[in-house]
Picture 1 (spheres, one colour):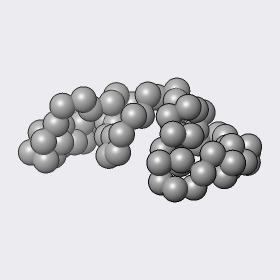
Picture 2 (cartoon, rainbow, N blue to C red):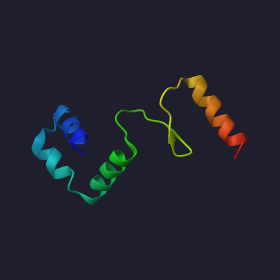
Picture 3 (tube, rainbow, N blue to C red):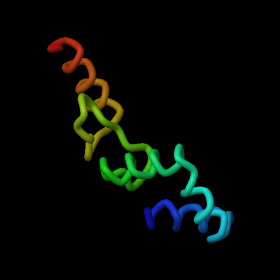
Picture 4 (cartoon, rainbow, N blue to C red):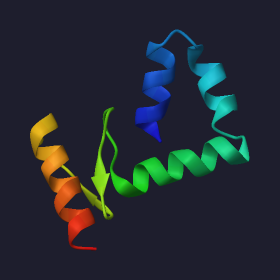
Length: 71
C-alpha cells in the first residue's frame, strides 16, 4: 500500500489524508486488490484474468475478439 500512499501525497492530499483514507473498509479492500494483482499504472488491462503487458489498440481488439470467439 506504499504505492497508493505515495500517489495520494503526490496528488497534494498530504500524508495525513493518505493515512486516514486507507483505513476506510472500502478503500482498504480496493488497495488490497490493487496490490494482489500487481497494478502499478493506469490503464492496466486484464483479459480473462491475465494482465496484458504489451499491447496496442489493434492487439487488444484482436485478443478480445479471439477470447470471445473461443469462449
